[in-house]
Length: 640
Image 1 (cartoon, one colour):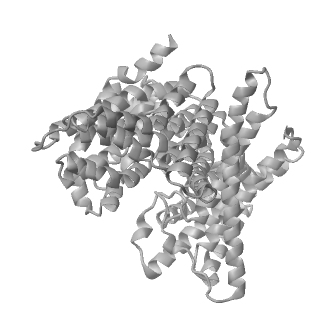
Image 2 (spheres, rainbow, N blue to C red):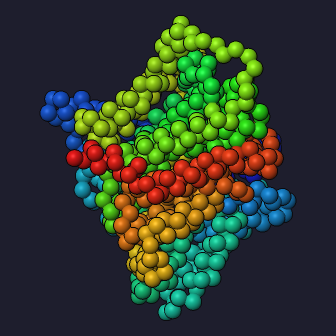
Image 3 (cartoon, one colour):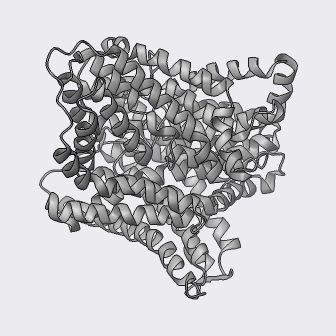
């Protein structure tokens, strides 16, 4: 979930010249941030392409791999700062959206106090880390030391802290409360108590209260890691704070430099380029011209277009909100009732999650590999999702065709002239997945280079669409769109980075080992374990967005999968398929809320409308779970 309620941002003072100057300076700095992240993502897109070209001449760019990894770090911090600027940092809580007046002010003060404490502490840790590790370190790129690139960490957390403070109240009197409380908490934790174990639970309870009050997810996860390392890490009093905060910074830096993470912003950027223009209209026209005259043609159009867009945008919310208004008339014109149409659009909004190169597949591969218990290639995860994803698509189409009401009019025959025009118009979009998959699986490019090819091709499609079709001002639209992409990527990477500190502590405390021992003592059958896992993951899908769930839950279930002999690719597809099912599960599945908002219908009506597809998806998830062949056949075939 996001804190997207811009109405909670502080109001500017009216009339004063100083306020006007400050407002202009803040707006100008926001524009600079947008351009900085645009340049960074552009460099990430172009560097691998240059490497592909230069490889033909048996040369390359010295230090480009290191530069790419540090550009990911830059995007994480600047994107996180932009998310804070727009009050859209990912959060677990939706509780504050129901609060008004003094209750809303109190919740904002509590969440901001906790967020300031955690953010400032991590920022201090980053500063200490680069002063000991980065300054005077190895020369990395263009003669610059590594400390130059690492300095974005304390600067980024500093910007986050400033913006959290600014958004904490509508006046400096209200902002003073979280400032004082946050500094007091930091001072308390830096005091050299002989015994601190008794303080851990009160601080964790305070962190939970802050989370419920709306604190960002990175604060919840990073704060838990800091508090538990500080209190239960077993360090001497004089080194306790130093090690706890520096460890958090070190794990963040090490993880963000994972080479595979470079693919995440690039594939996401490709999705944003695709979603910005009229690609959806061109694809709908093409598929409707081919299938519109057959029984269930409207459903085929809806399912394929939704799956295509979710594959590249990585978020079902984008699909429902962006395509709902376009596809609703398509379904209703084929005779579907309003309720059936809403149910179909609510369910199909997350169908593309299992198709490459969808963002959750990349995240699962990264997080699962980071546990060091399994070895996963991105190609295997992509291949593993292909057949299960196709199965769910076919089951959805089958349900829609069976459920279509009797059509009274005559079905129009195929118009080959219209098909030809529609195909020509959508040819650019159709080539994107083909080009991406060819680059991934042909062996001519690394995963990072394949992601770069995908992003650059989507960028060319965007330029053509913006310049000659929509005729918009590219200089204005491009930074806004890319900063929106950076906002999403930065928020996710920020959570990923701090989550590794929590994962390290859980491993130190042997929590996964204890879960394994409990599961072995309690559950004897692999199939019973899979059934229990399905139930737990559906609940997770109801309560958490997909990015948060991957980061928090995957490190806990991977050891269990190893013990029960579940292939890590199969485990990942089970995980994502269950989250997709959780999106539709009442009463709090995320797609239900989004559809209720998009179509202006009561939640109860959306639940009734989507219930048939919930049953269809549940059957599909059971097939994916208990027929591992569906997931493992393609990866095993290509390994032979």
